[in-house]
Length: 231
Image (cartoon, rainbow, N blue to C red; front, side, top):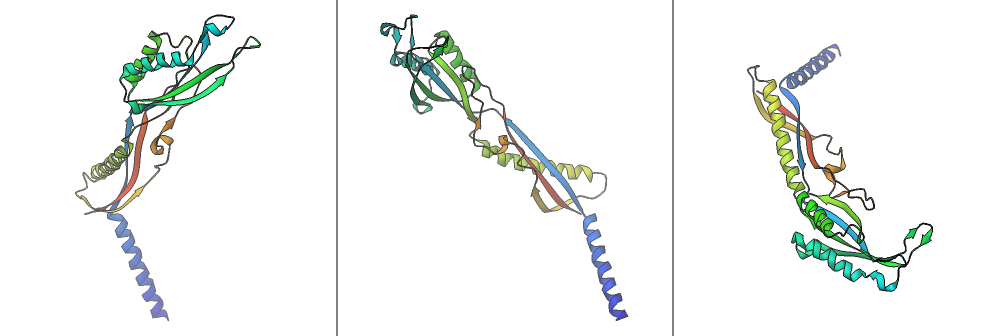
């Protein structure tokens, strides 16, 4: 019995020794990468409605929705967008309430446009301003969502960049040790769900009536943990 106990003890010590040796011949490092992307698709909702040119709101003074829509579309067409980038939105009847009085009913319509960059965004605002459409015709102008269509490609690039970052860290640690990296023993993702900017297919913005909404850069980030063999 005593001999068997000694044999078990020796085997246990050998296993523990092997584990310690294994730990001494590996290095664990983390890698990180990040891309800040500007949107290449910005979705804007423009709403416009009928109005009256006199205080009495006579039928003769109504500016019809058809005429307003022509002016809005003519202004948008200055951006030279493809037809599939402009989509007609909803139609509704509204009755404004001002000074404790309901005004006459009028039609309100909207359309959705997709632009590519902030330059087109600013150009659109300038065109609408130059035609005085913000004064009475356009009642809502909002960025509803935005995206980068190549986000998945950048995510793959981010994975590669994060691994390279981890490898460089490990090499720097071993620089003066006389040893070098061997094969990769394990790779694990870490903390890759920290924000909507990393996972969402689009990014919704807060819609504020008559106020132009803004947007933030689309962040693509990746973190991993790598265990290398040391040789």
